[in-house]
View 1: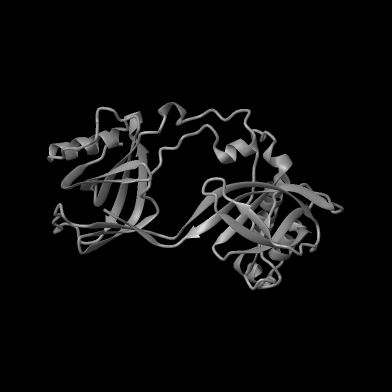
View 2: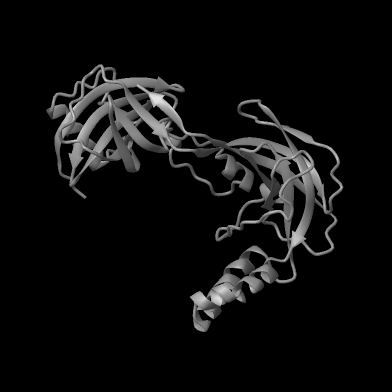
Length: 330
């Protein structure tokens, strides 16, 4: 799709973040709205691995994205841009791989070059290691004057970052977990703790049957709609958990901003079927706090087991940390 570009405002600033060079190109009116345009360049990026072949890989290697080098964007999850003293809300953003010679990316670059963009320290004839990010801005832009000494701030919304652990453990069904356990990030080598409260099995079908019989649901949906939703759920859930099987739940206590992901070792080391599927579940604990005074959390292991299961060979595979709002200043 061809796009219309005009009213360009040049910025021509750049910064290096975690080894990636980010160029702030400028602001352009694209169609009926204004967008801040940036280009990021990653010297370590290998375009040959950008679209890797995943056939034959295990769930573990797929989730670790082994052999895949992403073209990273260090300025993401942005909800506000401040140029000088003027604030703009970011309504949406998108990133395109320039190495594929995306027509719209090339047109935007040409429009800025026409308006005098000198692309200092940026080899625009070698696009294979570059991507373009566009941030749609809301605010008073038409009268904005950009001075080269203006400070530009990107405010990042709170977001979750995951770290690999791969710590094997045998999870016994029950609540016999008297001691804390430590685990370490393979990327940052930071250590954290977890206190498992209990591991138990739940019958999700029985839980959902109760949900469909909820009087609130019956007021919001017709009997036909409820029955269709019930049948749709059963069809999807049967691919996750056959009838007569249960799903394990791990209740645990740890630092407030951390959540854990457990998988069985068999699942991690197996090759996923071509038409594999999954469902999202939200579970909680019956008690608000654990023995150390922290909120009790719960997570489902989406591997069905029989009702007489006594233990599960699993791994604490990853943990996620909620990063609070932060700023990037250029």
